[in-house]
Length: 232
Image 1 (tube, rainbow, N blue to C red):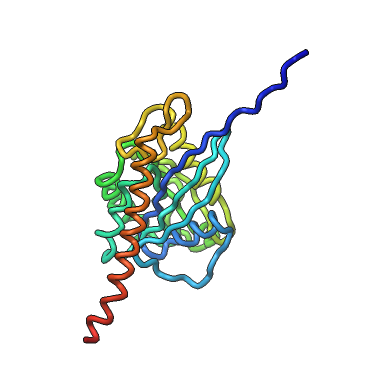
Image 2 (cartoon, rainbow, N blue to C red):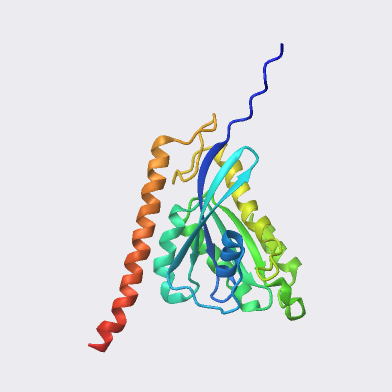
């Protein structure tokens, strides 16, 4: 009598991913489309950092993605760069209809690599392909830049939900592949060779997440306090 086949055990991991790029390129709508399948036509500038999560299944892994949507405005740069250190993946977003947002990609990438883990998986994302008639950034130009800098590349439309899943899952899959090879210096989402998370690294990850949330709360309180202080 043959023994029943055992189902492969699922391994749970947690990855932090940041969304970076100029203000107005559609980072918040990419996040809401991926995590809630929603799109807002009322564009609103992100203040500081916003946070959302989604659990996805990739092969035999259950991945909890912690996604940080960072503000693109210059005055928030010192605050948002602190979130890079805890991340293992990034989506560097530009607007395909605004060449200036693409021209700033190199500066964003340098800032990211200055603060982030050296093994971070980065995808260059050209958003708003639904406005094809207004395109000012050729796909070939962006792809060449991505290839030269070792980045993944994809074009998306948060409005039409085109390639949004593929962009986020591509970064998460890249993180998963790296995590099975070697632990990172941050320890976020990294695995032992047998597929289990390092206990100390898992603790460090939890501490980093708590600190980032507290930092976001303090930053929000600071923004709330400024108008009161100016009025006095």
